[in-house]
Image (cartoon, rainbow, N blue to C red; front, side, top):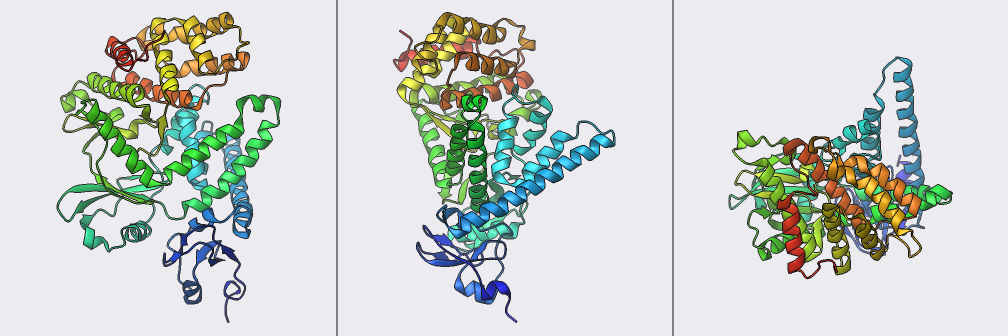
Length: 492
C-alpha cells in the first residue's frame, strides 16, 4: 500500500530555481515540488520512484521558499523542537556530571551541542572562540575546536555535490581524489585531488542541505534577538543588528563564487604592492557550492617550529601582518577571519592566506579611521583617539571627550606599558565594553572585525614571537605610517 507521504505529500512553490535533493535535477522557479521524509524536497519522478535523498539533512531548497510558505514555517517549528531537545539534553548532561562530582565538563558539552545543532551554531562557537576576554576562557579554548574541525560527511554525499557542480564524472576532471578529507568545517569539507594535467589541487565542497538548517536557525535567532532588544540593557548591545550582520556574513560564505573572487582580488592587490611573498590560492574553477584551487603545502602558523623549518618565525608573522595592513590602507579590503587554520607558513617560504569567505571592506573615511586608531595606540595619544572615534561616528557630539580619553587610556595603556610577556590583548575587551556602555559608544562593524583580527595576531605573537608588540614594533608601526602617507591618509 502506498505510504502516507506518497498519498498526501505537502508541496511548496519555489521562489527561485532549486534542485531535487534526490536526483539533483533542476527545478525552475515557480514550479511545484514535494516535501517528504523530514522536509526533504523531491521532484515528481523521485517521489514516485521513492529515491533516497543525497543528504540526511532537510532540504537545502527550503532556503529559497518564501518565509511565509508552508515549508519554511514548518521547518522553523521542527528546528525549534530539535534545538530545544539538544539544549535540554546538554543541560541534563551538565547536571549529571556535577552530581557525580565532575567539574569543568560544561565547555565540552556546549561544543558538542553546537556541533549537533549545525553550521549556524558552529559559527556562533567560532565567534565565542575568537572573543577572548568577553566569554569565560575555558569556553573560548574548547570552542576553538569549531574553527576548522567538524564531523565529516561520507564521501558519497560530497561526491554527488562535486559531480553536480562540475556536470561531469570525477574521472573526467581528476586523475585521483582523496576520499578522506583534509579538513571538515561547518560549511564545507576539503579534499585533496590531482587534475588530469598532474597539478595538485584541493576541493572545497559545500555540505549538502545546510541552506535549510541555516534558514530555520536564522528565524529563531532573529526572534531571540528581538526579545532581547526589548530589554534596556539588551537594546544597548543592539542584538538585532548583530544577528543581521551574522546572517549577512553567512549568506556570503554560502556563495563560493564570492570567495573565489576575494582570493583573486587579494592576489591582484599583492601583485600591485609587489608582494610576491604573500599569496592566496589560485582558483582553477568555482561555482556556488564548489571551489577547485591550487594546493598549498606548509604549516599552520600556530604549529610552526622555526628551528625545524629553518625560518625566522617572527619575521614571517611580521610579513603576514604587514601585508594585511597594506590591504587595509591601499585597497580598503582585508581578510576577516585570520584564525590559525587560515594562515600558513608555506614550504617555499611564502605566507599563505586561506578561506576567504569572510572579508572586510572599508570606505576611504573608514580606512583612515581604522589606521588612525592604530597610530593613536602606538603614540599613546588617547585624546586624539577619542576624537578619531567621534569622527567615525562611534561617539556622539555630546560625549565628554576628556572622560572618554581617560577611560580609553585606562583600557589600552596596559598594552603599551606592561612587560611584553604579560601583554594579553584579550584582557582589554571587558574594559572596552564597560567604556562603550558608559559613554554609549557605537562601534562600527568594520572596526569590530579589525579588532577581531588583532586578537588573532596577538594570539600568534604570544606563541610564536613573545617579544613582538604589535602596537609598538617599528617593523609594523613605521611602515604603516609610511603607507598612510603614500595613500594620503595621515591625520591632520
